[in-house]
Image 1 (cartoon, rainbow, N blue to C red):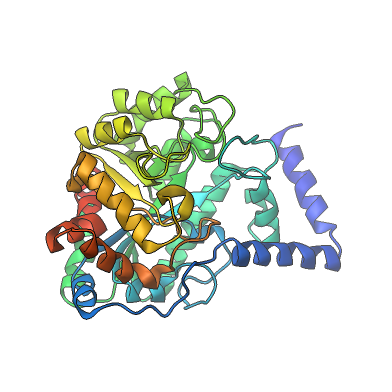
Image 2 (cartoon, helix red, strand yellow):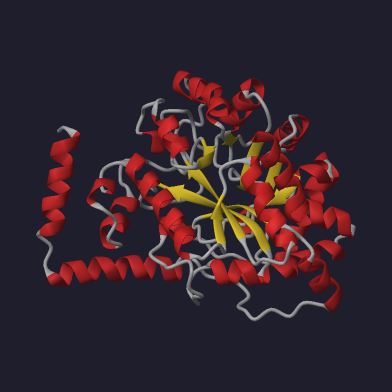
Length: 391
């Protein structure tokens, strides 16, 4: 069946839904957003004076979150999910990476996933995404970019989409003058968003994407996922993609990639490699996380490792578990290569929502990080890599 025929079939099928079925789909989407993005410790959060004062002086960077997947107005404060612009501002976030999720397998798990049954198709229809997104992963990514740009346009300058190093510097300069502004950087979670065509990398770059994760929860054209069937390395398609990423003004991200893909990328990539949201096997030994060997290689290439804020990544449910993983990573590869990648709104239960990030600052101090080291881990290291790699 051709793409046009498939699209027509999905559109006609959706148009033929009865009111009850349509309401059921909307309820399904709302339920997914609500129950899959919980917190262990609910706000409000109590932070000591020293940590609170330090946190207010930081330029916090979060290398990964997925709020564009959900039907929320990110300019309005919500009690649903993990972040929105008011909560990011309260948490003193200078730059938030907004990922686009374009395919998720039904029955998702951390061990082994078959990509043939796709949950995002249901979410796209249920949440009222344009029909062009129902059968195209590329169009889903472009729609996510469109949403972020529209939020920025409506924000009266409080949210700025960053594409270049100069854009990052402009956000930081505005913050230094007292403006409550958050930079937003677009990322792809899984290169299947290219719809199998390398030339679509330029399409995504033109839409503002500046980071591309090679895999998500299943194997794709570029290679094996840490949660896939093959556990294979880079394919010829994947090798050509990695070779093109830097010239497109983008960073390569190996979060969710199989160990074989991670090793291949570290051997062939030009410039720093990012692991946007992960844990380390030294603190939580599972297929999701980065080995000591690969962590050292990421650092040797000048990259950064974003440590997440959920139990499977860091070995426990609390903020202290994330700080402990960051301590392990800093001791292993050096403090200049550890960063924050929360995975907020990624259909997981995190330790806190965005407004709880000052608790992480406090925990890092308890785990022996100096104030300059906290500043590096909570944002400075990520900013260094972004400034060096962005156009």
